[in-house]
Amino acid sequence: MNNPRVAINGAAGRMGRQLLLALAEHPSCELGAAAEYAGHASVGHQVALLEPAYADRSDARDVIDALPPVVDQFDVCVDFTRPDVTLAMMSALAGTDKSFVVGTTGFDANGVAQLEQVAKEHAVVFAPNFSVGVTLTLGLLEAAAASLGDDYDVEIIEAHHRNKVDAPSGTALRMGQSVAKALNRDLDACAVYGRQGITGVRDHKTIGFETVRAGDIIGDHTVLFAGQGERIEITHRATDRMTFARGAIRAAHWVSSQPPGLYDMTHVIGLG
Image 1 (spheres, rainbow, N blue to C red):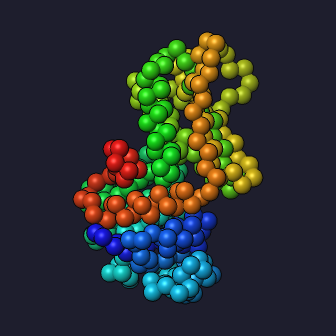
Image 2 (cartoon, rainbow, N blue to C red):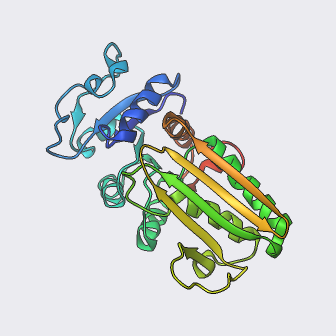
């Protein structure tokens, strides 16, 4: 699809506004709908109040509180909200031909299973992080872990703003999965989330996670490989949320022409 029409669910949120701007910047996408929950102050008002870039655009829309009534006005829905909101939106659009881009984090195993079920009938890009740099970093981590093997301890340190509600971040967990895969480990079995008290000697096959929540940090992730006599650190730092928003709109453009299936950013940028 050359010019997909994109719906933004949660348009008035922190990421929603960034997504609106990234969509306005994209040369081959247009806004199909902007939605917020019923009762939100933005519902019924012009989307330009959320993002001024739409003030003189032909695809400016009023913010609505439900997507099914305008299902004929968009091709792809982008959602960076909460697990329950995302799953409710997908359920409401079941049976349609819509595609989805999901940047929501914090899904439990049941939520992931529901996403996988949706992907049997819809094209879904689901990623904990839509940064192209993070996507490339995941490949570097897998290569480093495979080369270093079990002789190096692995610790993952992530930092985000004070308002982030889930921990560790979805990106940190995805990094852990990449490392564990390369080391033939089960992350669920070897992960250690923080340490306190008398913890004993470190099990060298564990993968540790440390979380920082402070200020307005957008997103820092460091994977530390510590051996005898040396340390290797692979770090990604995000300094602008537009990095994620632009990646998500790139994913929306890509997924609009894909068959049903569950995809991630490696597929979008041609590495998957």
